[in-house]
Image (tube, rainbow, N blue to C red; front, side, top):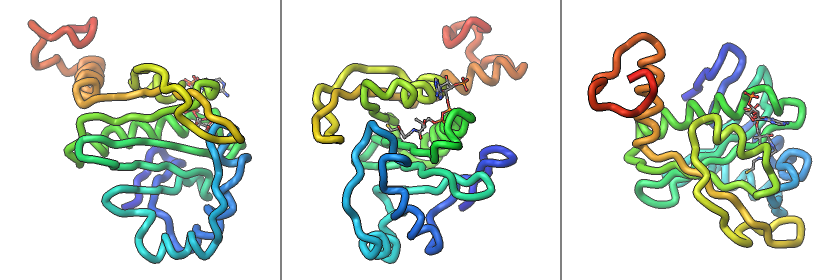
Length: 195
Ligand SMILES: CC(C)(COP(=O)(O)OP(=O)(O)OC[C@H]1O[C@@H](n2cnc3c(N)ncnc32)[C@H](O)[C@@H]1OP(=O)(O)O)[C@@H](O)C(=O)NCCC(=O)NCCS
C-alpha cells in the first residue's frame, strides 16, 4: 500500500533501498533531542527488514516521502484495542504540516481498519512542539508520566495524549456538518455548536 496524503506527501512501507538510510537516521539530528537513539548495526536493520520486522501485526514502520524520503511514521499495536503513534522528520521538513497530515491519515486508517478503541502518543514534556500536531489532530492530554522516558543520560517526564474512538466519531460528525451534511442526531447531539 502507498498512501498519498496530499499532492506531495506519500506514506509507504520501507523498501530494501531504504534500509541504509534509516540506519543513518538513528541519530539526534533526525530523532530530535527528546528521545533516545540506540546502537543498532546495519546488519541488524537488514535482519529486521528481511524478517518482515518493520511491518508486522505489532508494528508498522512507514516512510514519509516528499519526492524523497523525509521521515518515519510508526504505528504500534502493543495489545488488543490500543495503538501507539510516533513520528520523526528531517529538520528541513519540520513545520510544514507533514505530521498533522500523517496523524489525520493514521487516525482514520486505524479506526476504520482495526478493532482499536484508543490511540495514544507520549511526548517528553519539554518537547512542546511534538504535542502541537497531536492537539491539532484532536488528541487530549491525559496527564504526566513521571520519569517515563530515558534519553540523553537521564529519565524525563512525559505527557500522555490520547484519542479514543468516540472522539474520532465526533470529529467526523463535525466535519460532515461543516461540509453541509446535517448531523444524523441533530436534535439530541451535543457534538458541536452546529447541531
Ligand atoms: C515533532 C514533529 C514530528 C512535528 O512535525 P511537523 O510536521 O513539524 O508538525 P506540523 O508542521 O504538522 O505542525 C502542526 C502544528 O504544530 C505546531 N508547530 C509545528 N512546528 C512548530 C514550531 N517549530 N514552533 C511552534 N509550533 C510549531 C503548529 O501549531 C502547527 O500547526 P499550524 O501549522 O496550524 O501552525 C517534528 O518537529 C519532528 O520531527 N521533531 C523531531 C522528532 C520528534 O521530536 N518527534 C516526536 C517524538 S515524541
